Length: 289
Image (cartoon, rainbow, N blue to C red; front, side, top):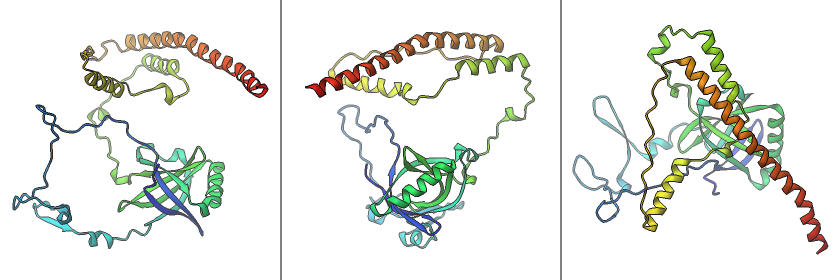
């Protein structure tokens, strides 16, 4: 990984120099816009709508459009004069229980690596934060934008998660919230039963991006010159007429799926135990050799 930012965690009188890395990456299949006839890349020109001339990057600035349609042009000097007091610093503002922060606030995750001289205070703060069971609420400026963020520990490393500001969270305003919708006790009990039936420990490795994998197969087939078979279209889901019947059927289906998956998990676990039994023998054989 390549660091994208260098700065320091400011914790009281303690300063911990760190490097910032993107903690996540999108695995989307990327495409170019091309001419259907010959596959030629489509290019775009930056053309001014006033004089019709192509504009070089060096002459492009940011503009804020007023309600009147007039444009306020801002330069790099205008942005440099803004009071980003936390520039190159991650200022710890407070500590709070993680459950008090709604996940809707989180925007993007980053890893923080300490510089050589900052390793000891980094580990000290990491251990103290981990034992406290809390997260640090901080303020940081990235890409000329100041954000709230949290610091938490994951796999022995600080994770900086930038947050949206409160006024950036939209309020849900839907008509059904004002309707008096009656839910019968039997329906609620059946829904709770369905949740209990489907309850299990979350393991992210059990899930995969089926769409991306299928798309990659289509591309590979194109390269190999094979015929591409169109997938069968799924029937459009319709609202259940009988809610109780639908819930009851869902509970039964979930039970059957869980019972069917139990032998497979047991077999997988047994396979692991056999491998563990063989492992010492292999190590012993290598030692004797």
